[in-house]
Image (tube, rainbow, N blue to C red; front, side):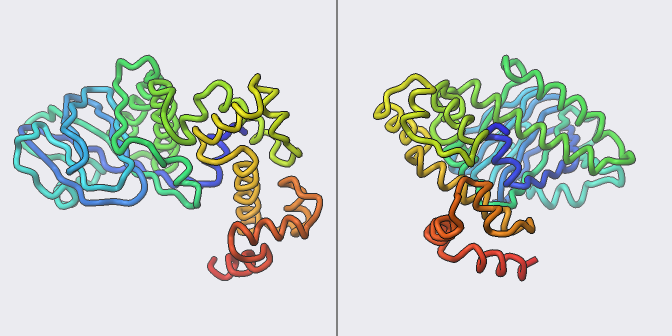
Length: 307
């Protein structure tokens, strides 16, 4: 798989498409701090969004999406000057049996849908580190076509309760997350961090090669040659973008895959070691213990007792 798909597979993203919000008249909602990541898409009308003490109010228009990544309290409003109410209380008290939150009187002039992504895994930092606290993807962005299609499906899916709704909503939310990240990378090819490295033609190519053949005995000189760089230039650029030297990144990714296999699978240590590029179970165990502070066997035993 490609690096982003690899990370998603280990994150085991739990996606929840939350209630549809339909509002009329002036309104403003404040939401408390949260964990993980949230998104909102505007189905109709306009709204303002800002993160308290972090960003200035930004207007969102129909078809726009935003991603909230830093867990700080945030606000949505028809106008930033409107007195804010507790968003969670408003949602709880105005939620209809059809899963729609209706606020105000008269025809809805603003409709939005949102969701939350919860990550089960230690790779969330790799995915989210150095992302802006607020990622905005405008409907007229060249890379927003897939999001426009997803928003239309979400609009239809949230108009009423239908069979298979939970499965559909979770899948749609995943589509939204991947496409917001894609659009963000396309618009910001020089983004810092691991995500930004994926957009770099040479380092991104090296990352893809490593992920496609994780058990291969890669050498820095080989990777550098394959992407048309000198060894020194490759190491410097890789470390600058990814935050780790190439071989250290390879080792960490191997150990991350091994840890997931120990927690969720039934292969013996020799098979797991071979799958991530170690001919010696002893070397594998030593590397694993150096990185995670305990032997693979002990980790597996403790992980199983927590299930």
